[in-house]
Length: 208
Image (tube, rainbow, N blue to C red):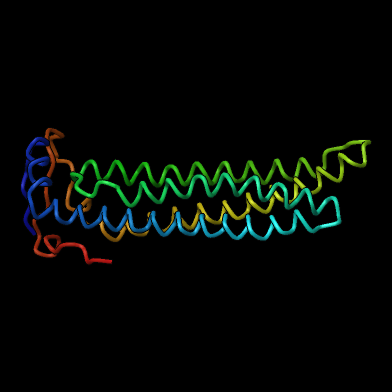
């Protein structure tokens, strides 16, 4: 096993040569491909809800069910409004990023989905609170039940959706980026970094 001690500024050069940039470009292309599929999934869910709940809202005779479908329509109008620009952004995303820019974008992507998952738990909790909100007004109780059930459903779907999206990106990162990160370790002096040039570590990550 061989190691090379390199100052930090040299590491920038190593990870910006043409061969490395080609690998990172491919990784970012795959990352954006995942985002496109994720946004298509969200858009499909939103479209089905808009269609199904639009019909349910128009035809239901039960007031609580009407409010349930009404909230589904409003909620998924927002989902659709997020999925379309999200898909366009992923389609037009810049693939030609350096190693450190790629790491930063990957970190931001994973963080966003984790934060969203936390918000989804808050949505579910608010739906439960709304359903169980005490009121003496029967009409308001019917509305709270319908809206609450819808928020619980939509929050549960988004929690599942965001966790799957996070897991897909994390698995992609572990498979493609981690082999590069494992080649770098701090030097004993703390001044620079050591790049592992072992024959096994020189193998480029496998494509997805």
